[in-house]
Figure 1: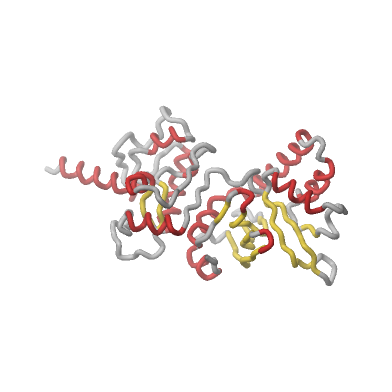
Figure 2: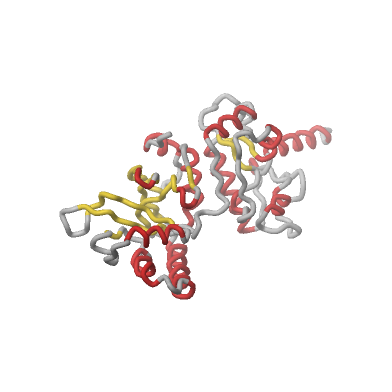
Length: 315
């Protein structure tokens, strides 16, 4: 399925992500979105972000998933995060990559995070492709543009850009197939649980009840197309993209401050209170127990509990 700019920008609600184009590197079976990512402090990063990239197991096929992914990685492109990436990876290559001096010559240049011409910027090397393959196999994300104009010249050349994403890709991010998404929506009767309505089915998303910000490397799981209905209902709830992002922000604030989100502004929790319990770890599968009781975690269960509470306390 091809993702179009129109379909994507219709869903994107982050004004700090400016879309320029979609590209495909067919030889490597890679797909990119060309963007400028701007931070509120004015810092910006310009380049290509792969969204179909087998080296890190990333296979995004729908505009909804791509919006979700870009919002997820947006914090990694702040001035501080980029500087930390450069510092960490420079140190890694100086301390851990002994015996990789030839490849290190390529990596040191790519660490400028700019587009680098194979012919004019990177070291001359007969086995150039092997060096680039090594860097990818080490877990780094490289974007490729086979027809980019060379700076200061009236010619094009293949260019490479190192993208400041975590080595090995973004851990904890799950991508579900279009078939699974359609099935999950059908299993949950296409009801937007936030609105308790099926009037507007367009743009519904199977939302993970357990927020990604609290996942660790062991939390990520596959979403097989044959997942049974009970498992789907236990793991997901249906919302639209706006509410998905609203929940993401509430969960981010909870993670940072220890104050749990208040659905509809109501200070009601069917288990626990507004404070994240120190009884549970902040990340990992066990952290999910700390989410139980929050309206954002399971909207329908929260609604049922609140209605029961109101019914029992009527005068």
